[in-house]
Image (tube, rainbow, N blue to C red):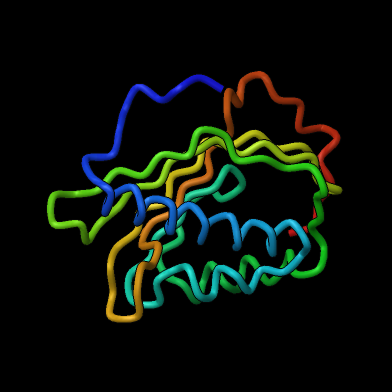
Length: 151
């Protein structure tokens, strides 16, 4: 993999970026084993919005997304997934961060290639995602006819 063209401004940013990326990796490890509860701790209960390739409208609160994810509980599995080129960008106050990465996974439901955007905000309880977008990478190239319906 080539060296990224961007750099963190200081060691504090680099350390915090690694922490945020590791939080995301921990949740995905659960997610791809059918355990949706990782998002219970990661996503904000106070202010949250969500877009996904399979939703037709924005989801505007944690309770709604939790109900949506509960339909996947125990059903989704992948031994083969990877996060590519994670990058965290911070605002000048270091209380908001944007994590972007690509996610590639071969699951028991379908194969996915996503551009992921997670907007983190520092809350009293720690860093929480206030917005999440999972956008299909080049959707015009995908064949969804073989996708299993689970939700």
